Image (tube, rainbow, N blue to C red; front, side):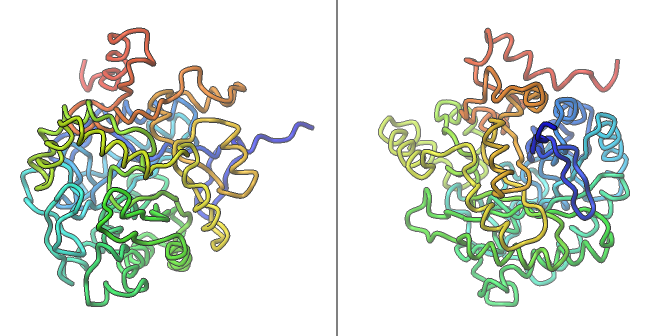
Length: 438
């Protein structure tokens, strides 16, 4: 008998079974309406990956409150009015034999485009974010308790919509990271100081969700296992290391988490998340939006427009990133897997079947999540099933997709992967077909 392919062996958790070991990681464009209501373009977007064969899709960040938005034009789950849209999206994805998870999120101070409703975000601290200069207000105990309730209500709405589970975005510099990180959290109350206190907000949310939806609904947590907070900020401390996150993962499992999703970095973008290049030329095209969001962005823009400044930044980025891109977080995933009994999912540039297969077989992780390489090749999983080790035109890790998402439709912007520019634009714009009306 042939040996079963680990990639296509179902993954059975306590409350969720996936048909294979590849998830589409959280990523999406500004496809929805400004008020947070969803539309047909997002349904078209998610169906690209469901049809491409992934076992599950983790939605883009879905704010549990309007003040928690990272950017406008992302569908929210902050009110019961949003349930019908998520039900429709989940039904469409299910028709492709794919599971769908909503990533419950709150930006905290890390808001690329604040929107018109709230000029400042809420955070564990009152200090602005150091890389971009995003401003914020320190959360009061009442703010914290209200936000805990908002996450629980978001999970309840997801379950009512027929969504297969939820993920808490506790990574990459967003609100949970702002509580977990010793370099960001400067509180002196029950939510600051020791690691146990810094993890309290996350654990309180997990327990509140369990109280709201019960123990039989899938709940996974995305964590920045190693923060590398000083990767581009040498005047800052390093933040949480893997040994700290191993403890947080154990506490999360005890509180009711069904899986841990391993990432890295305490802000975004970060040299290790998403690992790859920083396309300075492309970034300068969208800085007009960012300059009005963070008080350091004008200085960043001026620095990047000078040859010396751009060269110094690129050098710092590449040095902090290191040589590894694909599987960059596997060592941390393996460490966490050794201290929890629930599945561990790892993200980080995966697009080679043999690397994914080896990661699962060697016990580094139970599954992987993929974003950019699936944008480049929506049918990557089907290519693996057909015997390919890598797509003929793999993702180049240029990160042009993520730079453009601030102002333009999300898609692959690496023109070298296409026959011509018109073909690239047609693929980018395909998310708007079919349209919402004839």
